[in-house]
Image (cartoon, rainbow, N blue to C red):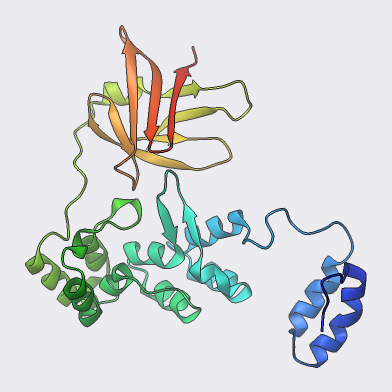
Length: 271
């Protein structure tokens, strides 16, 4: 039995025996031997590496081969979530579900992903979706990652999910999106800039335009699209409860304010 005081060197002496007894794989044996020289554990251990989680969730939108490589190497990724910003959480299964990647969804489910009403809708599992709605009337109005509706997930499933689409259309309330308002191109361009809220090297937000949509980004963190609700007030992708407001002085936008339940910050636009 391994003891709490076991160090890296003494652990290596145990590895061949553990491998021979079937307690660790030969692949793990090789990895342990290669990892032994050098420093200690990663700072985030025993939590999953956030950048690996982010990469996994990202590839689950489109890249079956890379999703398979990552989840076979680390099956716990199948249950991991990534916050794209402000609480817009997404799993690999959630990613595959809203873009209709059935084979990726089936892959991560086989590795322990937790099924949801959104994955069931995309996969055409009508009985499962019916049971969710029967047990929790109105749940069809719950929004998925990026505030994508349940009906949109079903439509992403194509012909195999046609029965789910028909059911949700009949049930009603499954395709209600957060209310937004048009944003004039001149107003969209007026909010672009760097907004600083402190002296630190990362204490600022960038507001850019991507694919004709405004987006907000914090360096070395994450970014998300902004959805306009009127008067230069926005909410970030997937989180209608958060408000991001831009203020003008004369003709120029000079600051932004972010109001989250636990955070209220005002940042000044750089010249």
